[in-house]
Image 1 (cartoon, rainbow, N blue to C red):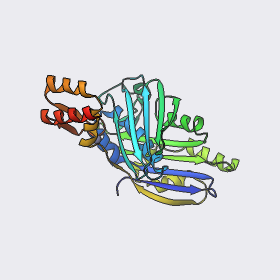
Image 2: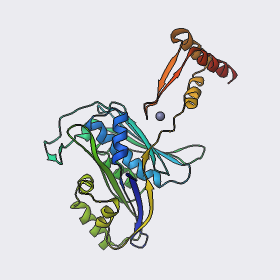
Image 3: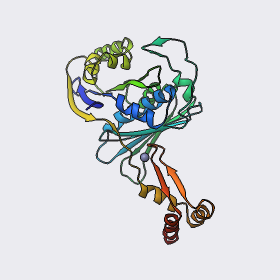
Length: 298
Ligand SMILES: [Zn+2]
C-alpha cells in the first residue's frame, strides 16, 4: 500500500484527526491531466482534501469538491468516496506563472497557486443518497486551497480545524511528494490543548518536507497532537474513475432525438472523452442510430 490515510482520535475523543500520503494518486492525476507544476499542485491539494473528506462518509456516499476561481487554471474538480477512491481534473492543466516570491524550498520554486486559482468560490457537494445532494459553498479565501478549506470548515461546518495540504513538484514537473492532514476540534477541548496544537501548527514544517524525510501519516499526527493518539482506521487511497461506455451512451440519449440525428447526419460518429480519466469512448453511425431509437422511446 503506497498511498494511505489514517483516521485517529485523541484528547478523549474531543479531537478527530486524519493524515494521508497521496503521492501516487497525485502523480497519476497529474499524468492523466497532462498537468504542469501549478495545475498538479492545485489539483493535488484538492484531491488530497477530497480523499480526507471522502473517508468521513459512509457506504456509497460521495463528495465532490469544486474550486471555481477566475484565475487561469479554471475549474478544479475532485471526487472521492468512502473507500479511498479519488478522481479529479483541472480545466487548464498547462498554465505557467512566475513563482510568487522567488523562494526556493525543496527542489522547487514556490508555486503561485493562489494567483493561478484567482478569486471565486469553493463548492462542497455531498451525495448522501438523498433526493437532493448537500451543497455548501464559501468564497475562496486565498486560492491556495488549504486556506480555502479551513475557511469552509469554520464557516459552513462550524468546526475549528487545522489543515495542511501539500504537493511537491520537481523541476522536471513530476510530482515527488503529496499528502495532508486535518485536525478537527470538537466541543470540550481545553484551552491548554488548543494552545499546544496552535503552537505545533505555527512551527510545523510543510507537510511535503516531512514526507520527504520519510515521515509517515501516523508520525505527522503524533507530532501535532498532545498525548496519546488512537489510530482507528487505515484506508488505501487510489485513483479510480467510475465512468463507463453505458454512462456516456445515456448522456448522448439525454441530448434528445433531434440533436442525435444532427450528429449522425453531420459527423456520422461521436467521440467522447472522460474529463476525469481521459478514457475515450467512440460511437459509430450504427451505434448512434441505435441511441436515436432509444431517445425516441424516452
Ligand atoms: Zn473516466
